[in-house]
Image 1 (tube, rainbow, N blue to C red):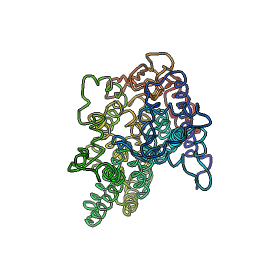
Image 2: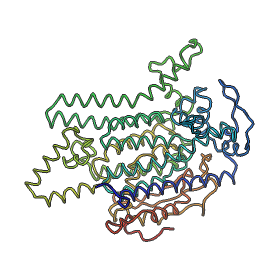
Image 3: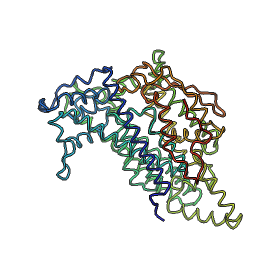
Image 4: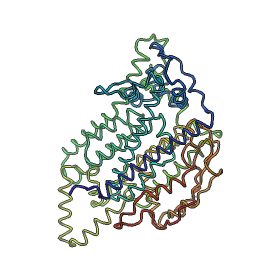
Length: 548
């Protein structure tokens, strides 16, 4: 029976869409407010020389002040994305920023589609650069809504709990890196294609999943890590074919197919490195060539990160960087707790990489653990044997238990491993303060937060985790929502999470988020999430207090 307009799934999806739109309106309003009241910390927005390879654009526009207002919001990494969209890759360091977002911005601001202009008519009104910036805001804020929807759909498929999926999705809408998803950064497009690709993979649509993962690699370099999901799938499918089905040829087929999918995901990264090598190395005299051009493996991206930004293993471990480690501590603590709790709760799954998971558990995520053409047949045979042995009633109860494992299900394992690798990279290799936005797309963070919100004392009650909110300043501090403020000026927020097996955590949430209005966000979550229309448990059990 097809879902009707009253179906819980559509109702929950509408709730997620509404929350995503509300969160974007809130963040954009606060950006405008603080941009009006405060001067910019970063002054790079006013430095905009003409493109090297093109004729200077017309400076006369109808609403020059409006264009300047939009251009003044183009700061920090946004400067690079807008410059690339306007002028292309002019300088070596600009190759650290991948081309998908600039290409989309350029397309939206310069293209006429089916005789219908998009944003191109605004160029004589506010100027080319302002239109490019506006297109970046439009792309990212609309893309965020789609990312939230895909996270909800993925959560439903993996957690098999629509209410937990709603909680996780709304938490994503108000995540600590929320400001970056409404600014001209690549986080939104990366989250959309990463989460969407994982959803299509779990749904068995491998071709679409490869395409989406490849697009994630076209937006950020760490998109290549999404190939790890296919590596995980291939490893288990090969094991299933060799040791369970005794079909070595099928194992070879699975390995070859998995390798080809991984190569396709790596293609955008490799192609972009080749593009940089062609522009910066070929056709130059040996004396004019950059050092990386003569390397055995000439990777431009690695050279830029090391040479211009000082990125490298343990290079950020300095006493003067301790404040930045504190800024990253909330997201890294959440990532660590989510991984450790999964490992402690399901050690046989975690430490065996899923190989020792019960067959019934694997059947709940058969697309990851067995060959597709045999998984349904195997599950039917196992079900038939269980019915003959124990009867249908016991089987039904068993399936209910499997369906309600939620965060602790074996389908979450590849996402946990992916998060662990990302968190280790952020801590040991990168500028650690970037970890908040670097990890903000990862679904297990929100699944674990949703999991602890629902638990009754097993992990953490929602009441004890939320009611211990306090801040250094009352109200919203002036710098909290300003994308320019990259130094720890003011706001910190503390959450005491009293968890079983863990000590009480005190999280200092950095200023680059919407922490100051978290009580408001909590109220939005509580008011917007339905209680199942009488057919299910309260989404926030044991949490009648609105918080302070």
